[in-house]
Amino acid sequence: MMTRGLILGAALTLAACETAGTLNFDEPGVNRLFSMSTPEYYAATTIASQVAQNCARYAYDSGLDAQMNEARNEVGRGSLAAASQRNAIDLETDVARRSFQAKHDVELTGTDLCAAGDAEKLEGSAIGALLLPA
Image (cartoon, rainbow, N blue to C red; front, side, top):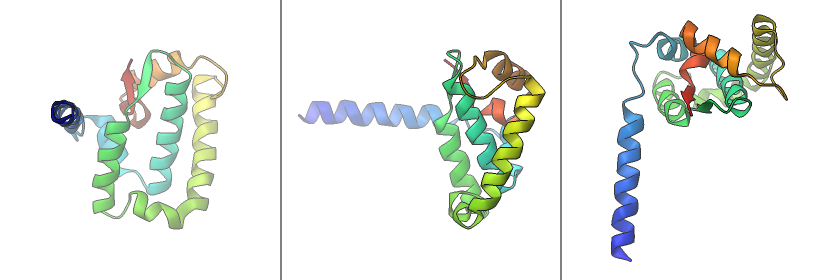
C-alpha cells in the first residue's frame, strides 16, 4: 500500500513539473492569454476546448489553463473575478465564437476543426496556446 502511494506521489510530482514549465510569457499566445480581459479569456478557453474536442490532433492544455487562472487571479482577472462578469463572458464568448467561425469558415460543433487549430497554432494566438498536439 505504501509503495502504491509513493508511486502515485511521484507521478503527480512529475505531472506538476511537466506542466509547471508551460507558463512561458515569452510565447505570444501565452502573453495574450494573460493580458486579456476576463470575458475575452473565458471566450478563448471555451473556443480552444471546442477545437480540441473536434480535432483528434489536439488536446486542451488544462495545465496551462490552471496555471494561467492562478496567475490571473493574482492580478484580479481570473476565476475569482469571473462570477461577477457572467453576462459579459457569455456575450464575449458568443462574439468570439462567431468571429472564429467566420475567420476559419467552420462551425464549432460537429465538424473537423483541425485546420482551424493548425491555423491558430501557426498564428501564435491565445487559442493556439491552449492546444496541445495529441
